[in-house]
Image (cartoon, rainbow, N blue to C red; front, top):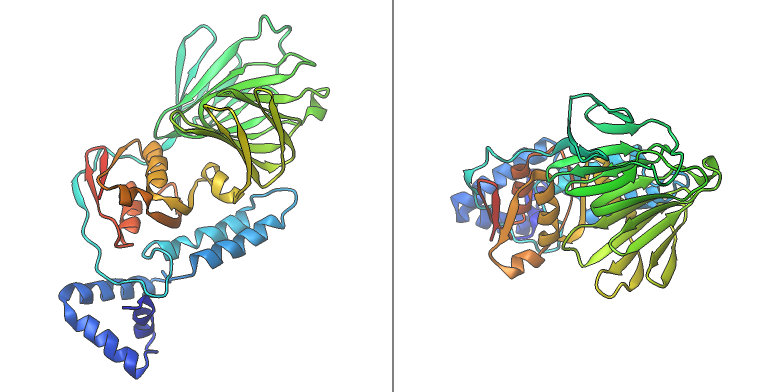
Length: 378
């Protein structure tokens, strides 16, 4: 059954031959009839199918015309509209088979919560402060409103007395950090960042991404007497003058990925050093320390910081890894083939996990089961 016949039926545009094909399918089973009416209901709500690739390409071309900023909320909103297509359908192919989706098995789901703003701040003396949404906290160097931690614009008198703090974001969390030099850092789930509470004048500003993922909007060197900014992580360093970039270095990942959004950076690993241009990503092999450079869809790499999951031709294994961090769940695949299936979609991070899993299940290629905080994909 060609999926478009269902849409043509809803719009009363079937040809005589198409009508016979549809009627035969519709009369075949109660499941087919139920599925048709579910599609019809959503279509009437304004949830229409689109060509995912064409939609993504159109929005991406608009974004690429923005010279000052890669990400623009007007175009982000346009991309989010693609969710109306993905909410029910996966892609749009010539001969997609229409079979009613299986109902998900939910043993227990109450323990699964949508991720939120939360972090643990470790001070230089080892003491810890829990930061959480809606709660204000102040230290002698910084203050937090529960969504971001902002350090006072101070300067260290020497490198010896430069105190360092650690911000740890758990699974199911996110947080924003503003360093003493004005650099803004969006920190993703399951991430740890070590940094000085103040920077020594005329010295390189250095921080360490211990593990995880973070997006940096670096205060330019022109505002700090030419001092460069360096991020160290897993055997590589990224040196910048003032720019925006994303580093992904989760424990267990084979590669450390650095994506440049704007400006210029130098990525160094051992004796190897490479310049990165906007719209490109370096991938450093943790074992060999060798780097490769690729052109990438930047929006797809950094949309997480703006409250979106953007999955373009991503495997279900990769997707469930991302979702597992945000919803703090474990994922088990019962079939290798299921792990390697690809999916396109853009989702708001405020959606419940089961809503997203239902969307994926509507592809009719995979089923899932929720058992406490474990998701079983089969």
